Image 1: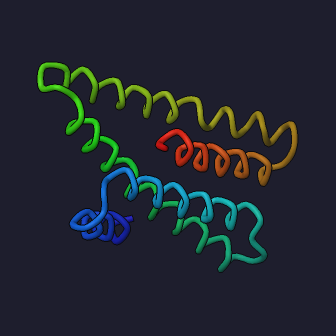
Image 2: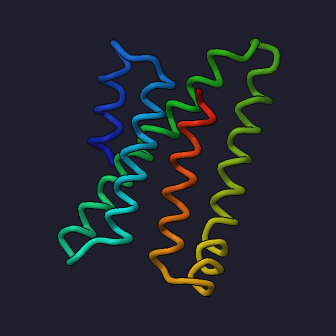
Length: 125
């Protein structure tokens, strides 16, 4: 994740933040699909590494982008709202994955996470 974060910071010199966030979402989605459907531990570990690398780029870049595009008098409120959305995902994500695993399989729940990550790329357009 640290290497992913540093790579994102390096890319920021030439690429807009939202493009990096979209790239991070795609890398994360590929990683979570690899972890969900991987054949063997190496494939699964690589998938989780990609997931972590992508997310490590997305989160700080989103906070930075919100800080840049929000007027100064609303900046703290906007950043705190983004943080609350993140914490909602932190608290609702595991039960959602458990529920989807009960309905289907663990792979089903990880595939749903991949779909949500791809949805990020659509929402940011």
